[in-house]
Structures are given as structure tokens and as C-alpha cells.
Amino acid sequence: MRILVAEDDAILAGAVLHGLRQAGYAVDWVKNGLEADSALEGDEFDLLILDLGLPRKSGLEVLKRLRGRDSRLPVLILTALDGVSDRVRGLDTGADDYLAKPFDLAELEARVRALTRRGMAGGPTLLRHGTLSYDQVGRMARINGEPLELSARELGVLEVLMLRSGRVVNKEQLAEQLYGWDEEVGANAIEVYVHRLRKILAESGANVQIHTIRGAGYLMDLAKGV
Image (cartoon, rainbow, N blue to C red; front, side, top):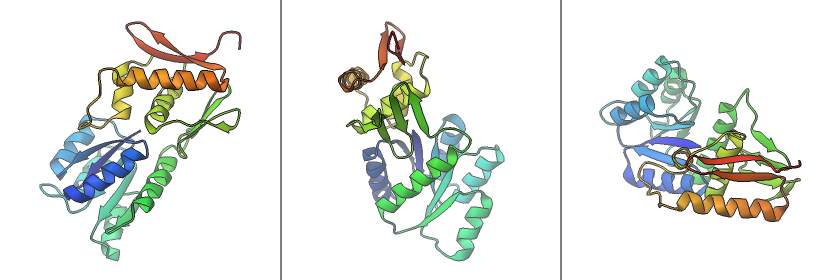
């Protein structure tokens, strides 16, 4: 799941990126409204965290242009402007939620989970494949109801493969959902995560398998005979 953070305060943005990445999200950061507008036009995200006081183009203008393109991307406003009129303007322009600075990172993560759930309206938030299930909001994987101990990256790989079960997913598609623009992707990183996930699924007795399709990528499917 990819999140775009549009915030000109480097210290605050760094804390937000670190917290969300630790929670398992792929997070990208832009420092001004022009960069935010360009990113939103050129890439796909699952959530936008938007500061109203951006330089070069205000957060409200970015939001207006986003909604003007008929985008339904969930938007969480972060701003020091905490007056009622500012909240009303942001929400009337098309924001989904509002969080005034300073804020607690735990609350931010809770708001992100809530908006993720809302953004998935009309689609399942609990993915199932054989005996394997994955809660996209709570970020918990289970086999026959028993939780699996997976790292944030392993959960990310699992989510992408389950969303595309029965179809081949290449390394580039996986990396796009696991890493932000400024994060280096090791040459063998994806292979390592897939290997670990495959081993954990096998040891847990899951009736799903991850196949390596040489030269193409990976495919999740039910084990033979199931």
C-alpha cells in the first residue's frame, strides 16, 4: 500500500515516513504543492497525507485539482491551521479527515487505518485464499485462524500476491508496493522476502504455494491436490 506525504517540514515528514514505514507502508515524500500535484498526476497512491501550508502551491489548491480530476483518493489533512473555518474549508474542498499539528504518531496511524478501511468501501478488506487470510486494515495474516509472525515487508509481499492470486507478479510490481522513491531496493531483496514467506507458509501447513515463474515473476496459487 502506497502513501504520499506532502509536507514541507523535513523533521516532521521524516518522523511520519519512519513511523508509517515501520508499520509496513510504502511511503513517498514531496516538499511542495507543485511536486505533490505532479506526483498525484503521474503515480497511483492509496492515501494522501497533505499539509495545507505547502509552498509554491497550497494544499487546498492541490486538493482542488485532485478532486477536479474526479479522483476518490482518500486525503488526510495535516496542518497547524486548526481553526474551525480552516477545518471546514479543507473538508468542503474534499478532504476525508483532518489532524491538527502537533499530533501523536499513534493517532496518525489510527487515522490512516480508518481511511484505508473507508477507501476500500465496496471491496473486501479481508482477503482469503485457501486456508490463508489477510486483514488489509489490521495487517494480520492467519492460517486457519492462527496468526502468522511476518515482518512488515513480508506482509507487503503477501498482500500484493493475494490481491493478484492466480496471476504473475513481477519484481518491479512488488518493489513499487514495498518501497518509497528514496528507499534503495537491494538486488536480491524481493527474492529474500519471497523465500522467507514461502518457507513460513510451508511450515504453517498452508494449502497455498508461491511459484517462481522463471523470467516473469511470482504466482500464488492453491497447492496441487487441494
